[in-house]
Image 1: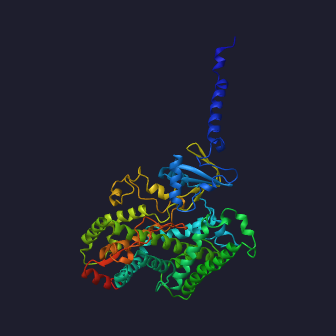
Image 2: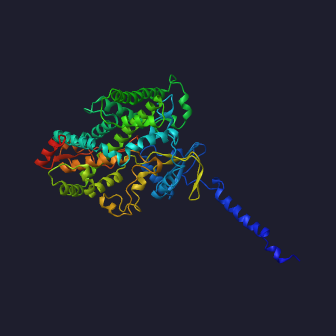
Image 3: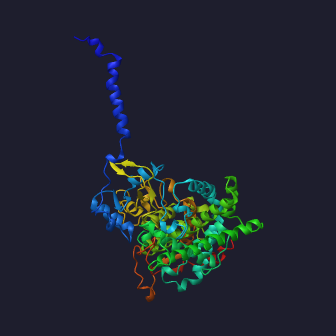
Length: 521
């Protein structure tokens, strides 16, 4: 009979301990493939869920699919591509923020990035998680962080006051939202800050060129617009072949984007080299790029792409938010009146608001956040890419998956578990510290770098308009056909309210005096 003391020897005890440790190591490092993919709609051989991918109003389509599948996370497969959709804030935060080290990639659409097509692979918002993207972000951060953007407050304030003057001069002729030149105001603010360029009118060549570039980029980015985004090999098709008109279009767009990217950058650079011009982001970026160790040709390439990215991204999204503000004021006059009372309590009705007043205007700040929740300019966000196999909630997320996207912002913004009565416009919901501000600007390492700049520009514009104008439905019969809808259908990444009728009226004779004197003060 064996000696029982031998059964308790260290060598014998080590066996079960080793087995337990081995099991623990295996369990943590077990292949992700052991898990299934997230739920998905009906799938077909080869094409997968291709017919389930929304081609219009993706933000709404993504939300509806999730409801049918009864899951806040699901996937769509098309050929070899996997799209993972996140319809909840919890999932978006868990993956895109807490695991941002592996969910910060981005695959630019072939129609945009391929040299034979638009050749716009340097557009910063579409860069992959690579060395160029990291250097670009490092260059932008010192000039776009919360403290740094204060240097641009005077310019933003000036342009807001010039907007008031334009609105006053044309208020009798404004009957619909498309007559409010919010886009011009935002373009002017950004052009001055980024390029040191003064936009003169809506017909300014600077505005015209970047507007065309914006439209072309948006059209080229959506998979539903060009088959080359689904079948990248199509980029090798010769442009002269019958049926290849799309490629000739891409080549025309490439010439236009190169003109827009280069012309205004080198205009600014010439001013800088000549010792002329004013403070601009480009001037600062060039100086910092030299310290980063970039060569001369690299500096030009990096800085001009950063500049056009900020210009396009800032104007398109911010003008959408500005129009959403006007839409909300028409629909909810009681909200407008309360915001005006708060502004009057600070200014006494005897001066225009400034950025220094911002801490004393909490309701206006909450109103602004609610506008962003109500009509997020990029409702389905820009997709994140996962660059290694991962698992989440016992689902498998394969390497190379496109994670859509900032977690489908629209679904998050209208989640009743986060925002009670989400279809009500309620700025006071943010008084509760447990209610988060809407994730309009993204998550994790892909958070929009211009968040603080955009917040400031839109805040001073909103406060200035509310201080001086009443915004009401238009009494003009010509505006009756402009129905007050939530958003318009769009084949682009951004959305904005459908055209709507409105009437702008100066609040008082004193308000008119302040507007006329505003740009001089």
